[in-house]
Image 1: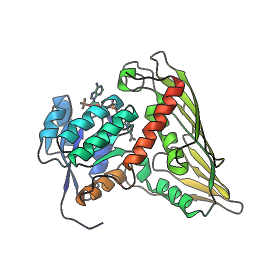
Image 2: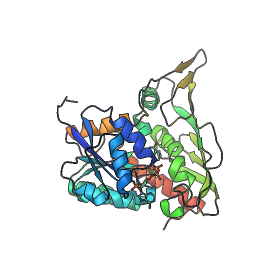
Image 3: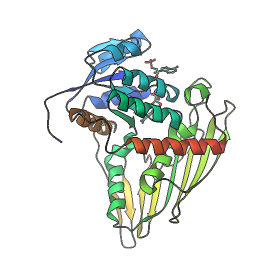
Image 4: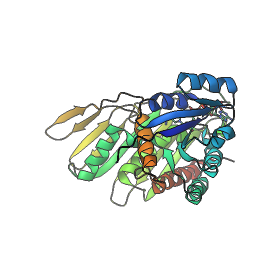
Length: 327
Ligand SMILES: NC(=O)c1ccc[n+]([C@@H]2O[C@H](COP(=O)([O-])OP(=O)(O)OC[C@H]3O[C@@H](n4cnc5c(N)ncnc54)[C@H](OP(=O)(O)O)[C@@H]3O)[C@@H](O)[C@H]2O)c1
């Protein structure tokens, strides 16, 4: 990647929880600057902007899109708005990094990708785990064949969220439920390490707000490989990923989707590896996008459009089995 003195000017759309962590990390990314933030609430926008040294603070998302100085917008609104807000930005010729899940279904994701191509602007799903050093390490280990092929994956993500029918976690209108919020990580683990499964079996327990409180998923591959995946909004689980190979096991310790450690166990050896990360971990995806934009790229070479489509198609299939329909 060529070194550039050019700065990529970022905007943040929606000043919620994850936007804070992202903004904090963006401060550490070379060639990146937080140019403007936008909240539906003027005071919230000003407070957020002041905290992360943003030049401008808008009280509307459209105003952010109309700012000619913005190169790329990070979308951090609830799932059900990703489609609408991504199209808003793309149609204003702004590059987009949009939080996971990319949208509510594969039809929306396909339209978002088409809009990016039509407007000739960059678009990527913020699947931050993909860019973390420990996760890249495991992917390279798989590719190297050093431990043979992967025979099974077991991965869970369980967290106890206090019940609030209005929160984006439980509210169906905001895309609530465990699968799209946290189950997406175990599903992504299986997808990124084993590929698209040949058979899927899923079952869920629903809340009285009619979203999945927990979701159990089995993936089967014609190679004989399997993935056992679980997510829950009501119980704290180890939130780890255990990857079994022909010649060993890699245990990505909890919480596996964040910067963490891992242990490699073979017949003769057991080694724990640490991956020192100085940020919340969002700096890696932000640096990736910044570098791509400096090189005028329109698609990530890591979190490709195909990968995002495969991911949302899997989530759609799982939802159809558990009867989770969003309107
Ligand atoms: N990558 C990760 O590690 C990670 C972690 C957590 C969440 N996420 C993803 O990021 C997205 C946001 O999650 P979050 O936890 O940051 O949510 P949050 O704290 O609820 O923030 C979402 C923000 O979206 C804006 N918004 C616009 N319309 C809204 C509406 N009708 N209701 C509620 N908020 C609305 C609000 O910003 P303003 O009031 O400022 O306009 C709100 O603060 C989700 O899609 C989630 O999956 C990713």
